[in-house]
Each structure stands twice: as structure tokens, then as C-alpha cells.
Length: 275
Image 1 (spheres, rainbow, N blue to C red):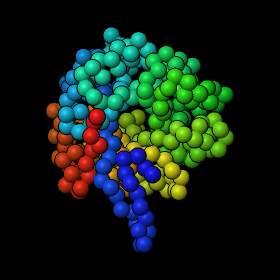
Image 2 (cartoon, one colour; image 1 turned 30 degrees about the vertical axis):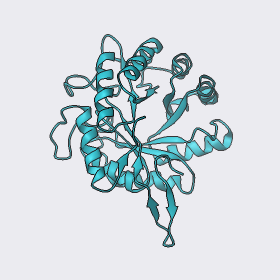
Image 3 (cartoon, rainbow, N blue to C red; image 1 turned 90 degrees about the vertical axis):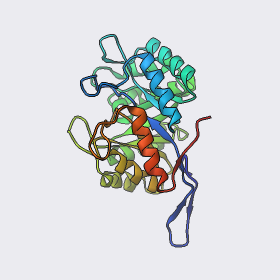
């Protein structure tokens, strides 16, 4: 079963979808500044306010990056703890912290962040942990020890295949079966299109993963709707895109979430309610 959907094969081999999905918001990422959009939340207080607003329009979880006093991406455990406390006080939204390296942090720092924050959920880019193969198992063992669930960040079909190889090798426990398929790139100025999902699904094959999709660029919403039709969940927000489907800037992250919820509802999909 894919998280958020009951899947059942019909006689024709297609799938019937129970139309409830998980909607995660990624409001800031590691790179955006006020120059990119004036409503990018950078401070702890702004993240809490964004969480509350996004929960009100349908988001059930938040992918969280924190910034230092200079506005730079950081893996500071104390700042993460402060942000988690503020977000959970302001809203019922679930919190996922990012361990993204952004070319600044090594694997040891990422593992230390996982260990010291003890967040309920963490995202780990598989290819970043693979920079030090000898320590890969340690990262996932650390997450299990502190009670953190893991979502694997996968940037290509090769990453999907590498994940299954890591399962087979025992490097990653089978129970950590959540993944995010990333369509498009900042670094390559590559705008995502729905067809970019096809290689991920081909690599997935018959394997069971609870998968979600995020998409860079102005076709974000189109890509996410395509993921819903394929039985996936979605992540939306300024980390990947700040533009509405018509090319105009969203006012804030909550408007982006609300726009997707409305578009998905027209196709019979409803976000899972925040408890």
C-alpha cells in the first residue's frame, strides 16, 4: 500500500484510487532569499506563522530548513529544536527536518544533526550519504536510535535503484520505505515536466515504496497532479517554485498550497486531514 492511498488492481490491470493524499509543504529550502520572493520564511517566527497558514488550507506536514543569522542554510541542532518547538506550538502540522548538505556539510555533520535533534522525521538525500559509503549505515542506524523516521530524497532513476541495492545489502532497514522523487533542478535550471516522473516509476517497478513528488519550476502543480493520478503523494512550496500555473507569483506558501488543493479537488483528490 502506498501512503495516503488504497490501491487495488482491477480486472483490466488499472488501479482504483481512494482519493486521499499527504500534502507536505516545503516553504523555504536552503537557497532562496528575500530577493527571490519577499515572503520566503527565514526566521523561526516566520516558519511557525507559515506552518499555521499552510495547515489551515490543507498541508499536513512541513519540510523544514533553518537559517543562521546571516540567512545561510544550517544544520544547527539547537536552531532546529527551536524551530520544531515553534512550529508545533503554532499548528498541528508534522515536522520533517532537512539534512541537506548544499555543498557545505559533510556526512559527519549530517549524522550529528540527526542524532542531536531527534526529530520525528528527517529527510536524507541518498547520494549525499553515499559520499562516505562506510558511514551510510550509521546514518540510518542513528535515525532509528533516536526515533526519527526517514524520507529518502531521490534525484534520478539511478537513485531509486541505488536505494533498493542498499536495502538488499542491509545498509538501510527495509522499514524505512518513504521516498521523495525530485523532478527538475535548481543547479541545471531545469524546469520539471510530468514526463520526468516516468523514469522514477519505471525504476520503482513492483517494489513497495511510500513515494511523494516535488517539482521545480512553473509546471510544479501540473507535475504534482500527475503524481496524484499515479498514486503518489505531493510536496509543494517555495523551496521548488514560487509561481502559479499562470506564471504570476504566489503571494505566499499558503496560497500555493491552497491552489493545489483546489486543483486536486476538481479531480476528486482530498488532502489528509491534520489531526
